[in-house]
Image (cartoon, rainbow, N blue to C red; front, side, top):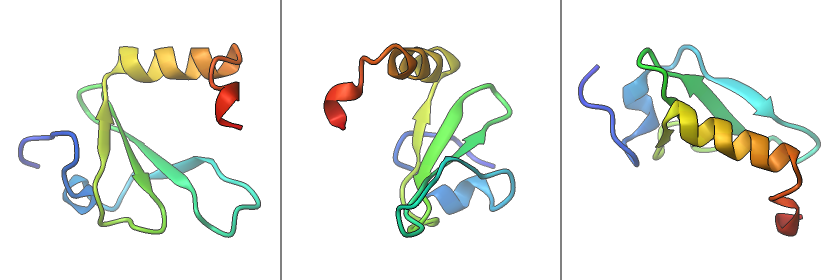
Length: 77
């Protein structure tokens, strides 16, 4: 695997290891996550698995999840 960067094609991260931690009754449109070897997390849209991946550091994804649990993202609902 070459250089990993934000917005890179998700297919370049491989097809193994992607999980759907946030799925539900949304017609199959889910966010998929993959833990990378260096500790970062990649996110992609399940309906576009070869599309762009967003890459987050462990601190960024931890802060997001903790904030969401605390209700800081409720304005998006």
